[in-house]
Image 1 (cartoon, rainbow, N blue to C red):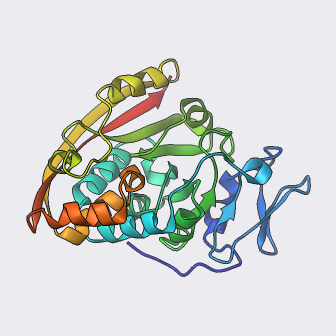
Image 2: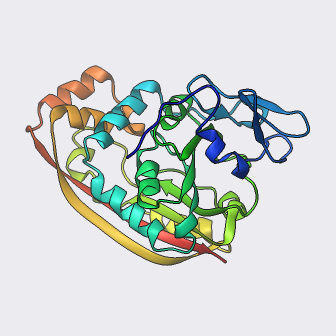
Length: 290
């Protein structure tokens, strides 16, 4: 994965600014003197780390991932443990319409490592990393020269122009069906990675982790009704060999991090074999617009 240093001038944002829209009036944006501006005078400063916040009104009721959660995710994904899942998402994107000149957003992009893997597999692609967490946005802003990083709330209108994208990605993240439909071109696709009920099964009960909802796939299909139809589905399952630190990062990067105290988690992980064999199991589904 190629990386480039983030600069105050928003150099990586320049790769995608033509895809973005003003969160206040939906007008087109351009980069001017270290800020994203629309022709109606709304201005959004580019942060020193290279991302821009495009949350309407400047606030959201949702709490994004903390700096510690993002750091744990960066370490675990950087170690390659979820490599087969990254490969599966990249394959799903590469085999769809628009892959030759892909214009992508990942909703809930986190560190941007999945997205960078996709962009690297599609040489002429460019992408938006979208997350509500400023700590995620800081990481994603530095991940790839063809990825621009923004802070935005998936449950508000996305600050992206109508019909300009070839792909919307949701990797273990919430998805907004109507907004995804709006920003995709007519031949665009929604690519969703969701865990199965076997994902991390060796750790769920022992470490009191959040369980996968048995009706998750059913609810996903229901949320897409009338907007998208599923055209392909690929289940990926493999085992990982994880050290105690890997397990701490695995728990610490997700919602389960908020359910255990650090001391209780460390004590529970210390009782596990090292390394521990842990199942990764997820489904990559591709949807096209109706």
